[in-house]
Length: 456
Image 1 (tube, rainbow, N blue to C red):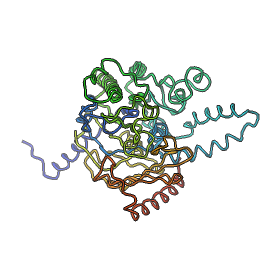
Image 2 (tube, rainbow, N blue to C red):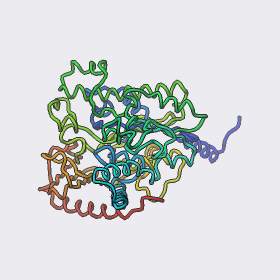
Image 3 (cartoon, rainbow, N blue to C red):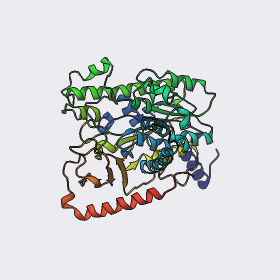
Image 4 (spheres, rainbow, N blue to C red):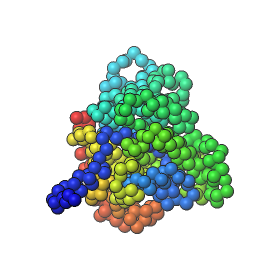
């Protein structure tokens, strides 16, 4: 019988433990919910919403229960997932480029200029180092499906996808906003997932990256009848029944895709990462059926607002060789971290200009602490004014404090979310010192972010 010396045994055990987190060039699927509020999942403790597939993903994965998106509306939030940058950085660059573009052609009338500017913004992503572009360093093939907002899939660096038309050809078939949000890509999962399956079937043992972003549970609220029937006899409002059925529709669509991966024996080498683009508020007792604002944006503290219902999201990272299955981390993390995390799992070095931090060490059991998260949004929704035009909102979040600030509207609120997670007791007038300290930090952060590089 061969006996290993203690030092060799230690080295062997160390290497084996490292190997559990090592998979040669794993496939990566970024799963993005659309308008799914953070409390409306079974795995987050909700007793009404049926999300069995996401519950299983959480049980088999690592859950960040206190994730935060960079914007409470979809387009800037999705841009963070595509580029790793804060919306403030992206918007600053975009505004400077739009200013140059406006001065290019003086022969167009105002309407023509406006349409050309829309097309220009719709294709600006070509200038950025996007996630699919950077993954090409490791020979990844990539597919875009669903909500996207950035022109054709090629413009964002994807190899294939469903958003495959641009400009006048697209605008003639869709309302302008739907055209820009993804056009044909918005059929993904609502009507078909076959283009995704065809893409994966066409690969010759190449690693793939999937942008899996169905426009679900987003409006239009037209869930399949069998899913709506699940909520028919529950003691909840009519708008809650419909919205929760939409959440279940997303869940079922994801389950169909995961079953496909299982049939193809691809799940063993695939990392599934779930996040939401922005939040929503639809509590079981509230009925928003007759309200244009609430049926479009959800409850008053949800989408487009500065509250946690707008910014907070669970994040799940799941794969077969994960060591810490079912574990949870309650500290604050940002979706800026996901770009860096995906690069880490793919073996791509993180460029220095990216603001995010890889979450992979946390998934492996390492300590991690972030002091604060600061985000901004143009024209935020505030009580009594859902559109709040020509204003800028800031959300300052720590593990204890959440401060909401719209300087142009003289609006500010402060909550102790450690004691008051649903933000019911407003404290700003009783905490002037805390408020002044936070305002200074926001002003400093704003200057620092605008001075950061956004390209290598």
